[in-house]
Amino acid sequence: MSNPQSSMSTVLYVEDEALNRELMRSIFKLRPELRLMEARLGADAIEIAEQERPDLILLDRNLPDISGEEVLRALRSREETLHTPVIIISGDTARPQSNEQGLGVLGYATKPYNIIALLSQIDGVLGAPPAEVQTRD
Image (cartoon, rainbow, N blue to C red; front, side, top):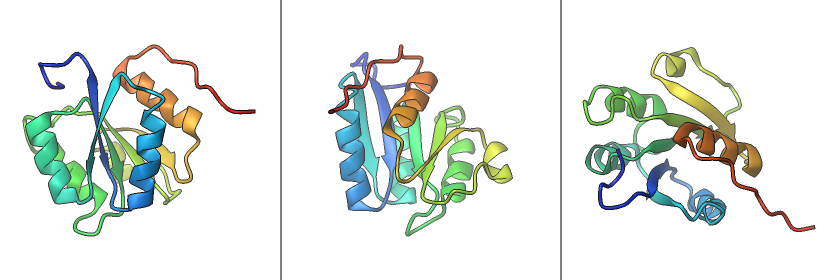
């Protein structure tokens, strides 16, 4: 699914808040074998996912242009993204929502992030062996 020129797995993070994108970039520094792409808007996410075919999408429920559910429906309606795994990332703690389960959502992470749990979910979806997370004392 990811770029054939690279053996690196690609993750698309869909989030409109700049600070949350910055935080996710920091988290992904713990997984240098993963390529992180970003989209601020749902419409952009659909286009990027169709063109780049990421191995995983981390999707915020609340976006400024269209809802996360609309993004999911659009992804599931296209051959290129029909089977792309999605984890919902949201400040909304109502999880899982029945409509999302029907659209193939594989996991949920709430803000603020439990970084170890989030990385564990990502590793589980991508089939990567869990790496140790170094924490500062």
